[in-house]
Every structure is written in structure tokens, then in C-alpha cells.
Amino acid sequence: MLSKIHHVGLVVRSADAALSFYRDALGLPVSVDRVIEDQGVRGVLLPIGDAEIELLEPTRDDTGVARYLETRGEGMHHVCLASDDCAADLKAAAAAGVQLIDEEPRPGLAGMIGFLHPKSNHGVLIEYATPIEESHVGASADALAQRIDHIGVVVEDISVAAATYERHFGFSLDDSRGGPIAALGIENAFMPAGNTDFEFIKPTSDEGPVAKFAAERGEGSFLLSLAVTDAAGAVEALRAGGVRAGDANGGVAFVSPRSSFGVNLQLVQRS
Ligand code: CO
Figure 1 (cartoon, rainbow, N blue to C red):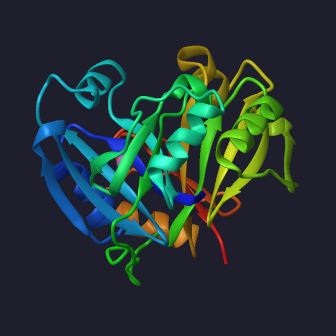
Figure 2: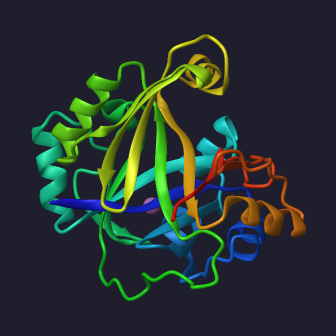
Figure 3: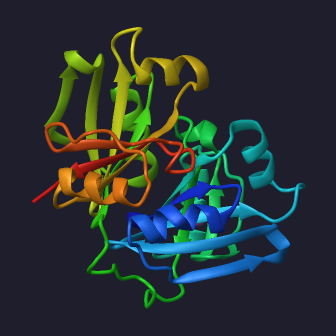
């Protein structure tokens, strides 16, 4: 069974450079920093709330991660769901018609892992992980961001995407939230997966960043939103560290992708 979002994987050119933002500016601790030779990546895990941010730096040119970086640049790469039995959940996904990248679990940074093809999940590369031990999970009290609030996924049709995710992963929409937001030219819906939500976002206008993303890249992971206790204070602290960030507006602020290594990164104030 799948219980929650375990981590979000980001592809970066240099983990050392990206740590200057994710570790030093956001104040997230590093729990694992390891080169996995046979996969040609250096992986760094930074706990945040009951989830993690995973930085992936290719160490060779002949891997999927390296090709992804070459064609799409730095940014969000995959979303990992915690599984209590990766082998069984991969089998169940195959039975539900999901195209698998890994038929069988293999050892990865987060435990026994397996990947599902993004084509089957509205452009999002999904990983399942059965953590071998959870001892590394735990956030830092002084971190600027407390948890991953939500992951924004641009889709063509919200009910179709929600039905797919419900069928594949067993999560359900929270009908009390979401709807059209005319000012942003979008419509959205929220699907809790543990303490983090999937936010499905559909452009309802031809203008704006969501419409641009949909036109250029189609469906897929669009936004990483982190919960902070004070958005304006967080912006001030980040700017003091040289990070480019917009002003907080209604408890929401955006970090420039130039400072967050290609990620469309939102800070949202939660009490
Ligand atoms: Co991962």
C-alpha cells in the first residue's frame, strides 16, 4: 500500500551548488550524500517535515538522469510515494495498466525502489520506495521551510487525472478545496497524499505560466510548494543570503528558478 509522498527528486548539474540553496539558505539538514556508482548519480537527501527533497547529480553522461538534464535542464524530476511493499505495489500498478520502468524493485537511495512511466501518470515520473529504515527522517527545527505543502501538476483534465491517481495510488480528492481561480487563469483540485498534497492545475486561459508550461511541455510536474510559518520573513531571510525571491503576497511568495536550480518553487504561509 502507498501511504504518502516520500520525497521529491530534483535533477541538478552540481549538488554542491544546489546545496547552497537547499541546505544553506532553506536550512534543511543533509541526511544522506552518496554516489551510487551503477546508476551514475550522486544523491543527496534533505529531510523536510515527514518527507525529503532528493538532489540528483549525474556523475556520467550515459544515464537517464544525465539525458534528462541535457534535454530539459535542471528542475523537478520525479515524485516518490512511500510503499510498505514495493514489489507488491509495482505488481498492482502493472495490473491496473500502468507502464512500468522497473518490473522488480531494485536498491536505491531511499530503500527498495521502482519507477513507473510518466506516460501512465499524466507526465509525472513516479517512484515507489520501501524505506529500509526511517531513522534519517526528521526535519531541522531551524529550517526556513517546515514541510512540502504540495506538488503542482499541470493536467489537461482535472477529473481524468484525479481518477487516474485514485485508481493507481489509492488517494482521493479533497472536495472541500480547489475550483476556478479566474485571476490566475487556472482551475485546481487537491489530492492529499499524507501531509503533502498533489495539486492538479488546469489552465483556463492562454496567458500565464501554467498555460505556457502546458503549451511547451504538456502535462507534468510544475511546482514545488513549501510551507513556511512566515512568508514575508522567509523572503527577507532568503534575500539576505543572496536568493532571488519575489515579495510575499497573501502569504505566498516565489523563489526565482535561477536561485532554486530550475525548480518553480513557492513558499506558502501555514499556521
Ligand atoms: Co527518488
